Length: 485
Ligand SMILES: NC(=O)C1=CN([C@@H]2O[C@H](COP(=O)(O)OP(=O)(O)OC[C@H]3O[C@@H](n4cnc5c(N)ncnc54)[C@H](O)[C@@H]3O)[C@@H](O)[C@H]2O)C=CC1
Ligand SMILES: O=C(O)[C@H]1O[C@H](OP(=O)(O)OP(=O)(O)OC[C@H]2O[C@@H](n3ccc(=O)[nH]c3=O)[C@H](O)[C@@H]2O)[C@H](O)[C@@H](O)[C@@H]1O
Image (cartoon, rainbow, N blue to C red; front, top):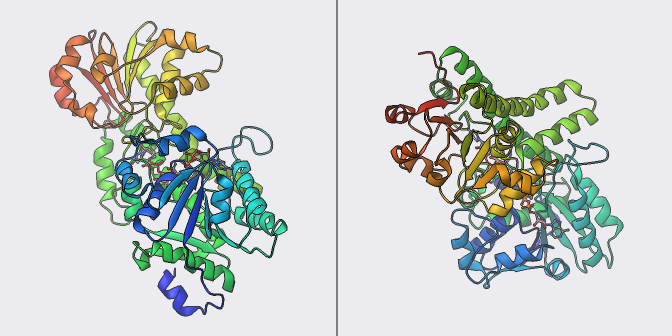
């Protein structure tokens, strides 16, 4: 693959690249906010305006005490340095669009809930509305950058909409620039990305637009990390990257079931396998199942794409990655019930962690939601604690997961606690669902003293020192470790 240096050396750019002076980002969410805040920080000569229709989100980005709408290590510091200088948050979408030379479309692309492709296809309504808004209000030419994760060839639909509605001779060049940051490490990932991928049409204008965007990243990203490809390769590479990352987790989780049945230890297996430099050690941590807003959504999107292309075997292959994840979550809750003498009715279970991973307050598709729903349906009482997730978010997620229950009914079974220690008081079992470091550092002796006996710990994250806890007196069950020695 060509790096940006090679590409521009090898191809004459007949259209002159625009030097980007003003950027607008449509969508002030987990991607738009941090990504464009970092662009503002690294490019003081560029004015960056992040716009969103959601007033309370924008207000939070603008809050005087920097109570930002998302929790992300290092983000506050970036916003503090740039906000009010060359970084602005606003609900005036039209003004943002009109003033910009380059517009990132960073809106949500959730899985469709109804209609054709429901449950699989991406809902492109938000992308289309944003694109139509650009077409409606633009009074000068723009580079429009697809930042959202979208199905292959979405850029073509965007181009058709923009060209059909273009006025006053405005030109629109469309680029694909998918985002690879992970939550919890977003700022680190943005400061030093493994790669920045830019897809463009292979026309002189497309390549020139690509160079304009590459120059923005060139302010801090080494040139050999800026990769340029065709539009469709770029769109597909994003889906492929997430599918392959999730596939590794499902593979290790599938092996964790074998470990539990045989007495092998999944950490040892992962270590041994990961030592092969062709496999590598990262992303091989067995867990209670992957969560997050994107893995499941993007794989289902790939499944839908494969089916639409009449590739049922390909679709079935990727679908299995998601099915294995569902199996892992079910298997874990069943193990809790089985271990607690086949019934948890009336028993109190402490669930430590509600976010889908540590260092984020995001709960989208979190394994905790499925676990708590399963415990509720077994008529257990659940105490939940998470250091970052808002209580209102927990109630919203649990209500959505059990639509037949009223919030009052849910609150009779579930209590949100102010600390891990409080959550574990009088519980029969502790379930570690998120790998927050603080769960390792809690006073396990004091927790043990406050629990009913026998006291059980179920470590769904391979987080705690099982031997240490056993010495205290806990019965410990760890994902991917069997009872046989
Ligand atoms: N969350 C993540 O870590 C990553 C997400 N992505 C992708 O990035 C995209 C955005 O994801 P998130 O930032 O997590 O979503 P999000 O839901 O946090 O943010 C999207 C924002 O767009 C706003 N919005 C929607 N339509 C709008 C419109 N027409 N005009 C103005 N604002 C509008 C919404 O109000 C919302 O605040 C998705 O396609 C996702 O797949 C990609 C990489 C990482
Ligand atoms: O498109 C996206 O949204 C992003 O999705 C993931 O990022 P994210 O979901 O934020 O977080 P990950 O670190 O990938 O974790 C996803 C889930 O997998 C779990 N996981 C991760 C790694 C592992 O070894 N085992 C494991 O169970 C995590 O606990 C979490 O629940 C990708 O890592 C990003 O590159 C991508 O940009």
